[in-house]
Length: 50
Image (cartoon, rainbow, N blue to C red):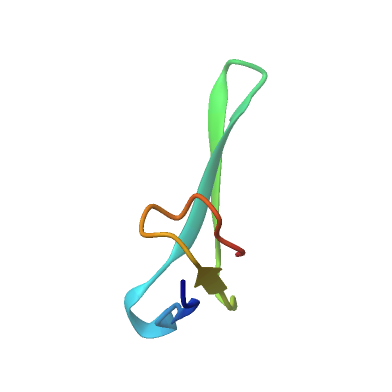
């Protein structure tokens, strides 16, 4: 089976997170500089490398 390589398009993507702090409030944030690449062998991403 052949390997498929994927690259994230940073113009149309975002990486954000939200953390609950002491069960009282939420802290949110985002990353403005990121790079994501993935390689897959199966159609269902079961053997993927990210």
